[in-house]
Length: 154
Image (cartoon, rainbow, N blue to C red; front, side, top):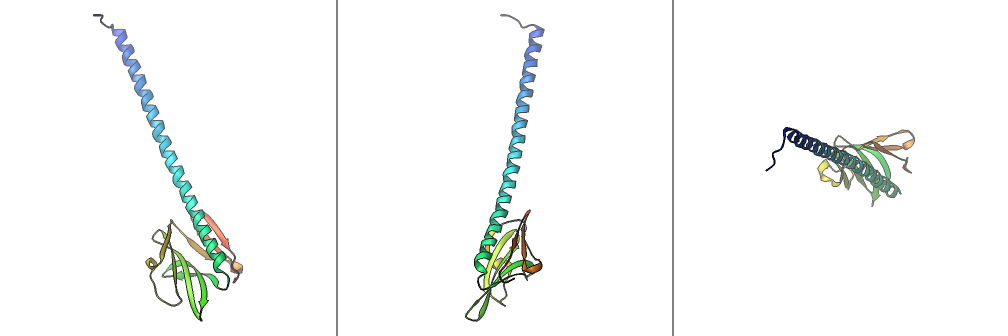
């Protein structure tokens, strides 16, 4: 049986240490890459959600502004976008608002009392704000994205 000399033991230990350092650095790069990928997909998903919501509101405004009126109002302390319509001499409101991290839509006869959770959930989003500007323009902000509506009634 051949005995390993002290130099061979040091060489073997050195090779194992280098291998472990390489394996650890590969693992760290993979973990960092996974973290960056996760953040990028979350940011992309949030931006897509904001665009989808603004597209939903734009389509709603485009289709709901034939005879009715679109305006910004308050619904139980929340900023809301109102679509007003008349059917058989009665006024009805469709309201879009953000409550508890969700965008809701509520269709009701004008003047009736409802609570924010009574509406239909549309989609989950962090923030949605409505602001009435000059000349009847309405600014809709969803996160970092915004939309400018120009209702016919304005």
